[in-house]
Image 1 (spheres, rainbow, N blue to C red):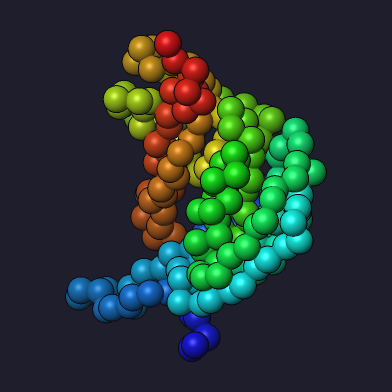
Image 2 (spheres, rainbow, N blue to C red):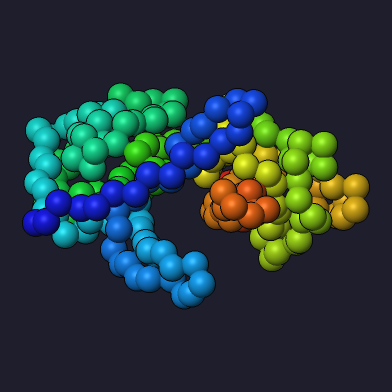
Amino acid sequence: LPKPINVSLDVGRESYGTFRLFEGAVYQGGVSQPPDIGIMLQSLTNNYLLMNTTVASFPEYASLHQIASTIAGQIGCTLLLKSKNPERKISNYSFTGSPQKQVQKLNEMGVVAFVDNKVLVVVDPQQSRSDDIFTISAASGMVGVPQPTTDGCLVRTMIGQGIEVGNEVRIESDVNPGVNGNYIIIQLDFEISNRDEPFYYVLRCQNKEFFFGTTS
């Protein structure tokens, strides 16, 4: 297979330095329109792994930690495992196929697993990625007014280190208090430019009770 072309995007401010916002493999390129002629690259995290094939098999019983560590190594990620029972035994695990598909199979083992940049996140259901709860308000960099959705809300906030997919956040809006409460970030988009004004996240947040399936 050809060697993938990787794109890394580091952002930040002089006050706190830079951090890695995105890293992925290019799957499509093009040229922008005049007058600013440039190259446009589209990339996805671990996209090139869909073309690879790996084999993983364990003895009759293997721990969740062993399996997750093996998968993380095969997809070139570090492992973030937050489970009350990481040594829980799983019987007869074997897999042949794309390493990316192994992440999907990991979700069949009673955990929530996903890749965020170069980290394989594995957490128990009803467990957020971080123990910290980030407050998003006008004082902390909220942009505009959060908009309600069927299962949560959309909110914009200035880019800063620490907000990641799977985190729990608290929304505090004086203009639209109906959306105030705790949420889990299920999707993180960003609009960023080094020559223009956009420099913020667009967070799709799901109501915490809805995300954890605890609503009545």
